[in-house]
Length: 74
Image 1 (cartoon, rainbow, N blue to C red):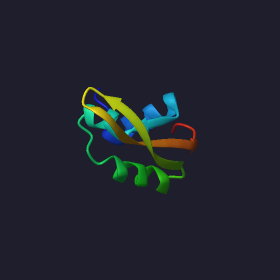
Image 2 (image 1 turned 120 degrees about the vertical axis):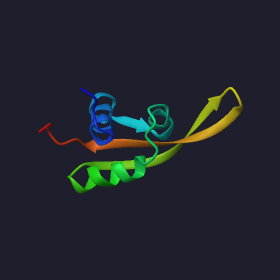
Image 3 (image 1 turned 180 degrees about the vertical axis):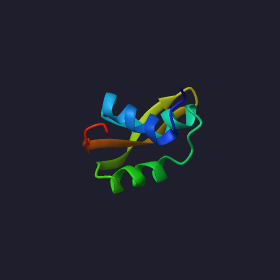
Image 4 (image 1 turned 135 degrees about the vertical axis):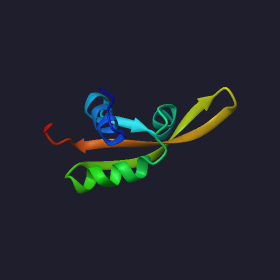
Protein backbone atom coordinates (compact mmCIF):
# COMPACT_ATOMS: atom_id res chain seq x y z
CA UNK A 1 0.00 0.00 0.00
CA UNK A 2 1.34 3.43 -0.94
CA UNK A 3 1.71 5.94 1.90
CA UNK A 4 0.29 9.44 1.71
CA UNK A 5 2.88 12.21 1.53
CA UNK A 6 2.13 13.28 5.10
CA UNK A 7 2.49 9.73 6.41
CA UNK A 8 5.74 9.26 4.48
CA UNK A 9 7.21 12.46 5.97
CA UNK A 10 6.05 11.48 9.47
CA UNK A 11 7.60 8.03 9.02
CA UNK A 12 10.93 9.58 7.96
CA UNK A 13 10.89 11.97 10.91
CA UNK A 14 10.22 9.09 13.31
CA UNK A 15 12.99 6.96 11.78
CA UNK A 16 15.67 9.64 11.34
CA UNK A 17 14.62 12.57 13.52
CA UNK A 18 14.94 14.94 10.57
CA UNK A 19 14.13 15.38 6.90
CA UNK A 20 15.40 17.69 4.18
CA UNK A 21 13.69 19.45 1.33
CA UNK A 22 15.85 17.63 -1.23
CA UNK A 23 14.96 14.21 0.21
CA UNK A 24 11.32 15.07 -0.32
CA UNK A 25 11.86 16.40 -3.81
CA UNK A 26 13.42 13.03 -4.75
CA UNK A 27 10.13 11.45 -3.64
CA UNK A 28 8.12 14.01 -5.67
CA UNK A 29 6.93 15.81 -2.54
CA UNK A 30 7.09 19.52 -3.31
CA UNK A 31 4.94 20.97 -0.50
CA UNK A 32 7.02 19.94 2.50
CA UNK A 33 6.41 23.19 4.41
CA UNK A 34 2.66 22.57 4.20
CA UNK A 35 3.09 19.03 5.51
CA UNK A 36 5.30 20.25 8.35
CA UNK A 37 2.66 22.84 9.27
CA UNK A 38 0.01 20.11 9.35
CA UNK A 39 2.18 17.95 11.62
CA UNK A 40 2.81 20.92 13.94
CA UNK A 41 -0.94 21.45 14.17
CA UNK A 42 -1.18 17.79 15.26
CA UNK A 43 1.23 18.41 18.17
CA UNK A 44 4.66 17.81 16.66
CA UNK A 45 7.45 20.23 17.61
CA UNK A 46 9.58 20.76 14.51
CA UNK A 47 12.28 23.33 13.80
CA UNK A 48 13.84 24.17 10.46
CA UNK A 49 17.22 25.51 9.44
CA UNK A 50 19.42 25.89 6.40
CA UNK A 51 22.31 23.42 6.23
CA UNK A 52 25.30 23.50 3.88
CA UNK A 53 25.57 20.76 1.25
CA UNK A 54 28.07 19.88 -1.43
CA UNK A 55 26.67 18.75 -4.76
CA UNK A 56 28.21 17.89 -8.09
CA UNK A 57 27.54 21.52 -9.02
CA UNK A 58 29.45 22.92 -6.04
CA UNK A 59 28.49 24.24 -2.63
CA UNK A 60 24.88 24.96 -1.81
CA UNK A 61 22.34 24.76 0.96
CA UNK A 62 19.30 22.69 1.80
CA UNK A 63 16.49 23.20 4.29
CA UNK A 64 16.36 20.63 7.08
CA UNK A 65 13.46 20.03 9.48
CA UNK A 66 14.24 18.39 12.83
CA UNK A 67 11.56 16.90 15.09
CA UNK A 68 11.92 17.43 18.83
CA UNK A 69 8.60 16.07 20.06
CA UNK A 70 7.33 13.08 18.14
CA UNK A 71 3.82 11.97 19.14
CA UNK A 72 3.13 8.26 19.44
CA UNK A 73 1.85 6.60 16.29
CA UNK A 74 -1.91 6.33 16.11
